[in-house]
Length: 506
Image (cartoon, rainbow, N blue to C red):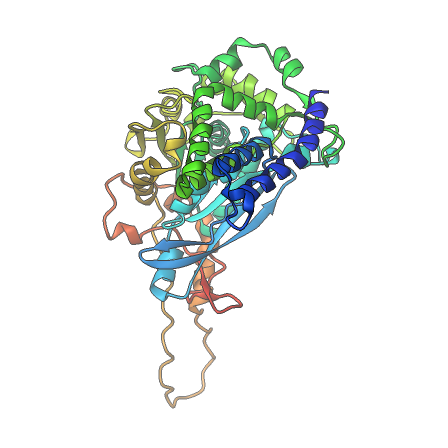
């Protein structure tokens, strides 16, 4: 019933929010007589704030149109490669007409960024993706709003999350021979489970996994989030935060943890900060500080856009990660797509390098929670493991903003590069020698073209376990190593592939 009341309230508020926006524009437009009245700017700012507090926030777009790569503007085309009822695998494909830049892009490592499914959309990692696109082929998991998924598409469980990650890893391995994986916050747990299960089966595992600010062991340095999950019973969560989607949405009748409740929880964790932020926005509008007011809008357009989570997934995450600590106790069993139950054994991972990142001031995933992955992954040699603490960074600072770009990203980039596959450039096809007059003989087999050899190399790459699985040294990357990265996309010949508009892609 609470969700239905909320939906009705939003429907009633929407026209008033739009009316407030109109009034704000009227009082700030110099062509309107009322804009010259005393306190007109203050009235306009007040209406603008009312509009932003009352409006409904839809899913933002990534909006990454281009990135700068060593002074060359590289165009970005965002596309969906795999579609699931609850998730899409998005690729940010890069295009350039500059031959030298294109060759550099083609030889860069492929990275799967696993975004959190914990309230916000994957666009929360926009800065993460944009920064990494300069040096990597980037894919990201884009989780869908559960209220938009019809009931006939079934439920979504924590096991499904783990299985999706494994499928996406295999997709990148098929394209590039192997890949790297990065998880931010909540997905560190299912990502570690996914890689563990692949290792236990003897499948090729990613070359490296980078885990950032996640609750691998939520018992360490518990935060307010951990305390809430551990102090309340599962029955309390079922009775107080799980509701059915109203009939106005495609997922009508689905049991979910609603986004608006999550957003209330986010704000309640630090209400004074949000109150002062909105007051500062009001003052910036009065002063005409467009830069500061626009920065506020961009942040809260993202922060206020939340999604519903399927109740099964949410409750299982609470039980598995925050109450029973099944990963660290070695008691977590996952059901694979074939219905077989498999035990998660992080100690089976041997050929995937591990890097953990924590923020010194993280108030969501406490100190030591992410670093606990090193205690579980005992099969990974010590020289293939690294922990980094970002000084002065909070939870969001380790993957977004100045500290991410200037402090954290250079460390992550160097770690991925140090554990990338060696590049195998395609051999250049030799020009045919001049024909000699000789006695006719049985015609020899034609030599394979450069394109065919690249394709053959890419197809053989997953099978060459001994070469791909052998860990690289953890020495700092040199200039020569900067060129020794992932295998070229097997869909690309030795020469650059051209798109319909003549641009070349990688």
